[in-house]
Length: 315
View 1 (tube, rainbow, N blue to C red):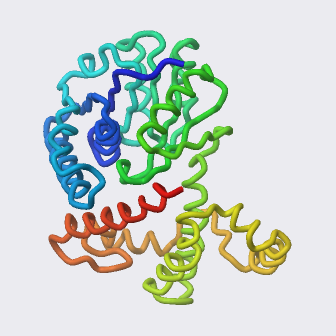
View 2: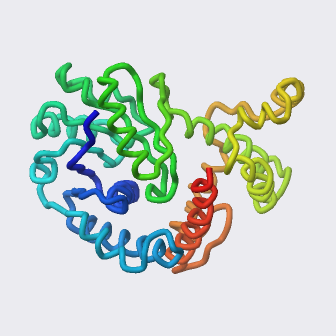
């Protein structure tokens, strides 16, 4: 099995810049393309700031940031960005028309055998590549990272039977060499795996708040210091084994009829949207963040994730 050489990331926003940063941290030269110059500039600044925090917390050496940033090229032209690439991953907006058009461009510009990946978790792979020739569809996959991409270990890989298994193994090896924990998704499911689990938790959390069962602060504390405390190192199935499958069955029979079975997003979220309380980006969501503190709060969030990485290092 040969390794993957030239890497291109398309889309320099929240996810794209973090994906490119990850590859560069682990020694890979990577091209980060975005058609908008301001996005390329913002991406460079964001990567520099994130590398500074990694150095401050000891995740990279004190002098490593400049070398890492130097491994990332910011081409201005798509054809230049993908020329000779062996692995191309897109992280453009979640719009099916945009994705289809981009994959058509990549089919035209990339050599046969170039692995073409999408970071999507909400759009169907078959829909995105439906207009491509059959041989090219065999090069395509979903490669879904979690935000912030340079810190969260999980990457979900589609294993839907369209790709050569050797190519999928090459992608796995590339990502695992970058410290990622990869899982294979064996069915073409909306949301893949992790987002479906996350939405199940979120549905009950929002229902509990709407019912007045506890304050937002206490509901978050219940999750952080109860289930999520274990989930940081132990999966649900392992937890079920530890607690006893008979116990989990009995509790499920008792509780599942009582918890939310909503089939749409919570009305609580819709009221927040109507009030322009969208979270950190507007200064208030379930909690109030104040004005001008977005960068400070995000940095603190990243610092907490960096501390959690130590538990992954030990496993």
